[in-house]
Length: 267
Image (cartoon, rainbow, N blue to C red; front, side):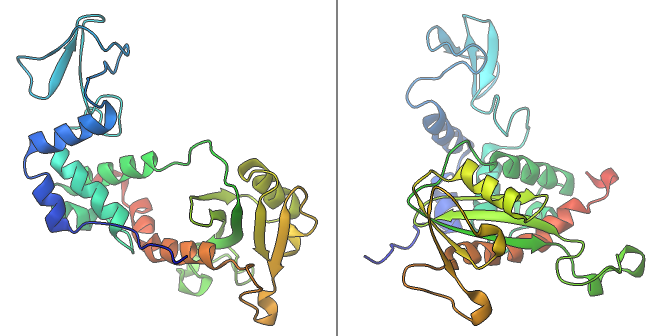
């Protein structure tokens, strides 16, 4: 059965849905609380009143504290409008090559410092939860970082080519499901197979390439494809899904690398 394309909306449709601040706040309240506001401090759902002095703010008669839908979220204490947060999240999630804080500041009409703050908060919220992948899982590793030949002379390690000076990233992609990726200290057997055991349910089918670190993987239905022999697919065994994830990640890497290099005084 062919996979249905992911449904998305255009920026015009997004703005038409949240054309006022009230619309944006109502949407987030519905997502977070449903029909009844819940105190962000004590969890109380009774004796909650709307604040008369502050817009979009509630007063909890149980703990005698004010709260809003932004309280205890990535938008906590932010003075930026909910509309701008919604658009920032949209840009970050839909931009195939990522978006830099400089570009976002121009799109939203805010300072570079505020845009950097928003992107850092949104990325922080995308951290992986404590869930395990199952069924059919593709596994692969890649390396992130600048090429040695493109570095300034004082930054070159002069100790080889390929993965030298780069960070190893290990990824697992459930077909038709979620993806988990993380930086690993090493790509040896102990490290990679231990990560698979911690993140993939036992009995699942795991597809990898011919990397020697995957040999002897226990507790899974393990099949490989021999990339060194220019083999991309062997029946149902392939790693095209996780490799597509790497392709998208590396397109956006320059933007993320730029964020990392923003001088402290500009943040």
